[in-house]
Image (cartoon, rainbow, N blue to C red; front, top):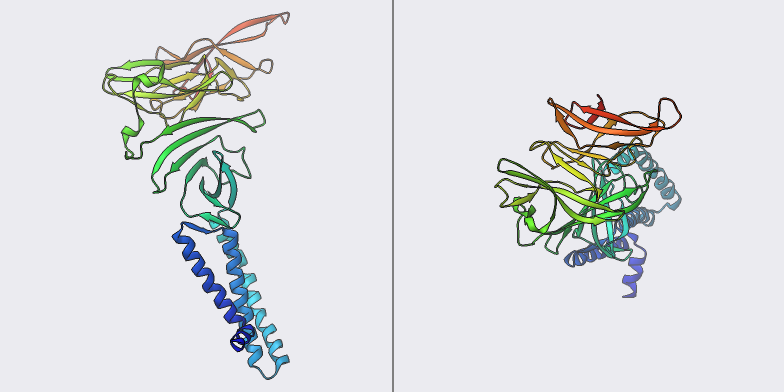
Length: 373
């Protein structure tokens, strides 16, 4: 037994082979338990295996040679082409690594620790796996976070995204719930608060139009308008900090018998917000009744697809003496021209006091951009 041990001791290749086999067995056992090594551990195991193989080869050449000095020189010379090959391939390997590398972060979500794996090329997606210490992680995605378009790491650059949509999975990989988290930022663009909107999904249902089914009596109706048999309404989803609320649009195509959620995402408006649909497609949400000229807050949301998506409206108006303008009336049509009546409280022409000046804006692109009449 001692002879066998001594023989193995003089053969690094055998040690390396045993190391590789043991790690394969460990990985197989962990896989059966839905557990795997963290990325850094996998890279370390691969590096040790490669270094052990190279050193083992040189050791066997050295031990089998009669001229030890010559063998050492030839071995050193033999490493030169390998080093040159590695240096030549570094740019290619680096280029591939940039697009294939998925950074891992240990993070806490909903008071539970996860290993978050970031994929960020055209879209920023984060998969959350069970955390089993610094060395191990789960193999099944427990939560998926979509941070929107871009190519950044939301953990190292937390203030870029405007929000995130979380999708939660059960042990069988089926969606069990969703949660939308919108970020509230200060004037410098730093996230200072978050709003949550939860969607519970019955695990026995499949995804189809009925997943967005809502009983009319389950939500507070803020505004409603009927177009033939189609009814569009703004519904209140939840209250949030700062005297604000989250709202979305529901639609009925059977004269009010059944309502379905239309909006892809909720929008945040003040509790005093006003709403209007001018036709089946064009609608507006007036948040606080103010349009801030520095665009620090959204004053008017516009939808051109029945409430599916909302876009902040832009006002082409400059006045260095005021911070905002007031919205006096919700958007309306006047001789087929889309208008909105506003006002500004500013210094009068005599510069000896202040006055309210009426401003009427018109839009030629269905409320996305507004210019003075």
